[in-house]
Length: 244
Image 1: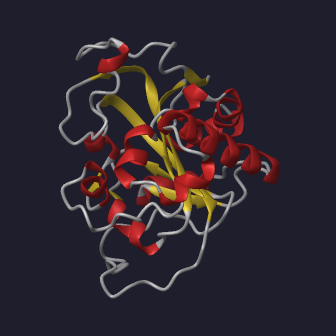
Image 2: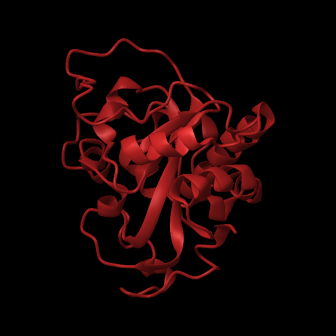
């Protein structure tokens, strides 16, 4: 489905900091993406795909960033010109660089809240902006794509979906998703309302972005392991231009 953005779309995004679209990817792309994510994550953690559903949350969390590097089919989907063009029109900037991706698999709350000191739980119990949670200076916006959705009844301990508080950016529309601005609060506590659904986060950055120290990033040392030091500019090898 082609998304020709109207002025109303951009106005809504600028006013509220987010906007939801249906059918951002095709059914075929969804199948490829789900399979590719499972394969890439499975290879990283050394478990069969069927074992991922019951794997430790911290283990999955640690290895769920930048999976596009591990699978060519996944790379083709997230480098979609359609997705990049929507992001570019919403923030009114181009070209766009891929900051990072992050996979939230189904049953991602399987350790919640048993280990309240884990990096996974600390991330899940927080609300922050992309600018606060990313060690990449220059993030512009993100797409939180819904891959699967299983309706659930919220538990009494689930956070209230108060319209006066942060918006629920976790779409219920499979193949659809929410684009949100880097300054919009990304309240991960609302994942408790969607415990058996799966999502894929694609974060876009401006062309001239850099790696900085930011304590709020749970994967802050990721680029350091790739040879980066603080204040280094991102390059096309590790963070390629995704839309021109």
